[in-house]
Length: 505
Image 1: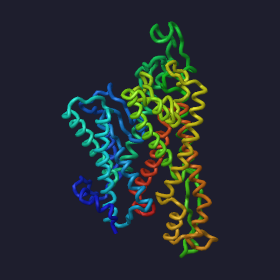
Image 2 (image 1 turned 90 degrees about the vertical axis):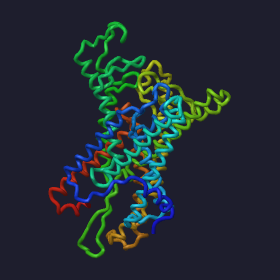
Image 3 (image 1 turned 180 degrees about the vertical axis):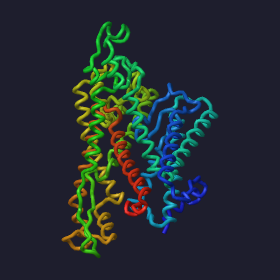
Image 4 (image 1 turned 45 degrees about the vertical axis):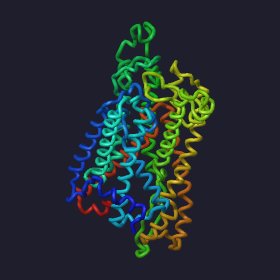
């Protein structure tokens, strides 16, 4: 029976645009084409600036969420996939906590569930667009008409992104728009930090191209001597000077770290615990129930970073009130004290330099110790990093345990699935309570280990200056691996149609 909560959204779901289910089997080749077209559309939108805004006078309050949102500052993808992800998390939490009852096997309930999620995403797009405009993220907007024009651009772009995601979700392409756009954004960031030929012009930088690979070969095959106005006259830059670069520019250490993190995540994701199973009706049939070491995948680090980003968002808003109310500075400084980011590199945001919010901000890495405009000493960086790591891993563990309970991954839920599939653990009575007791030996431990591992990997990537954020690398590796598996299954199912059922397609 459809939940009353979902019925409240029924009038709105009828008027929202919808992508129809394909009326024929989409071939693997066509899915690839659809996926590439959607990706190209999103990339084009990411390079179309919003008409009517001036980026120089605004502050990027959502700088810390850009990787998760797959968004780009000042373009039609300013909102990114934020409304879709937030709406999905809301519905997942409501369903997992049993606040709404939805039978996903019932086509009517499933349609109402997805329709409600879309309506919430549209509502969030409207809310966030208004908040951006009125909150000063785009600077001072003089006329009401210009505000309306900017709002219309953000709203229509948000609807296009929702529909692009739906095209993939309905089976026209591969994977989901959310995953595709996140992986593309991270890949673009890694590519830019590797091969960009634009100079790093921040004060105290080495005046080499930002891309570390280009900088490496430029130093390797040049005279290593730079003219007056760059470094000191006649000063040389050698290969080992590129391991840690100034002004936050990517260095060789970051490149090596990126490769190591990439390989480490792939390796860890292959590790799993297997519970032996037998089919109750056929004694000869044996199977296994695999539980990965990363039991809840990257969910804990995503939720932790989203929580941090929202704290930093409200902290920046509070700090901006200091100019209007100087007497509040002492109290607001306890929550978070901010300053403008160093000029040149990532200069569009405020950087926490004190207060509680400073402790939950990812450390900017070893390279910032070399930056002459940075006041953070080695001891400050060590204390900051240690405090951040302890808090971050603790929150990852807490969020991982919460997610297990609300997303159907708890021992009681898995035990119910095993019983419903008419399987049992050999040597034990076929009882949901017995199986749940056995699973409790593994799942809580795997959840804690998952939180610790993803927290450490994300922190290591940020601390050593990887070519993208730690969260972004974890997300992209998982997404790329899932896409590789999906493409393999699709190709196998098309070449051998009989394997479709075996692969669950």
